[in-house]
Length: 292
Image (cartoon, rainbow, N blue to C red; front, side):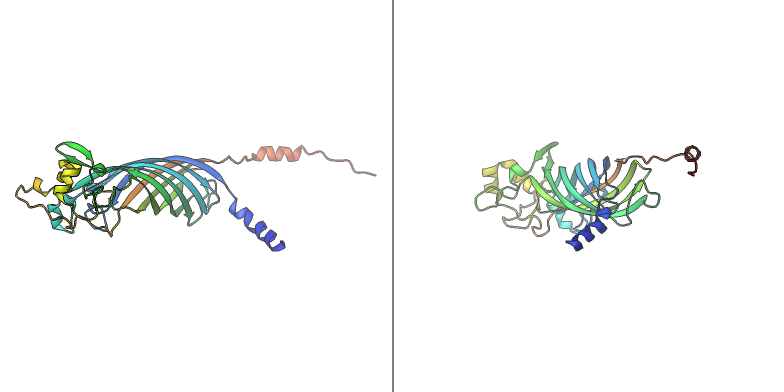
């Protein structure tokens, strides 16, 4: 018991010093990595979209913080941007989707960070957490946008095919950034975070081409039309056989948020006494008469 008490006395002030709450908003960009990205390792400026969000951060101490993040953004991709595989032009697929994300994130300030301390006004940081997000891939066909998941473009929902994928899933946010305190109450941060997903269908492209005839009969002509679109470029093109590769099911999709944020810190201002008041108080001290 004595050892436990000593440990608490030593570490209690460290873990609970300088606790404060902050709220803020962010603007930034969103990107994605997947079967319709230009490369398996990077995205392109042409596929950069906007993102925005709000957050609440609770600072435990100048090393650690937790935040609840709500972010809304778009991601998109197209075979026409491919730089690795020219044959992807013969697939001719494209997509867009909105992303709605709620994330619980833990942060670690590498150099410590304390807005009301002159020596800790900036710090790089790393973060990780868990997120729940909602998406809905769409594609444009004859000047109209169509939801892809209900169509089952890879045969989802047909007999002997997988079931349709869920549009609400979990991801793992990881990344880093930089915090800069403008003053005691306002902080600016910039960060980039990757989202590791557990689906290959952010872009509605994952595995193999279905039987187009069965797909058209069961899910409709539009489903078959949007599953393979090279005939829009070459009317004489022959559709791929059932089971031919449409995507890479072993390489799951990612999405990325890069944000510039500003937040307000609910830190009580420290009251300081002016020198004049200090002197006045000293001068006003009563002088006791010596006792005989």
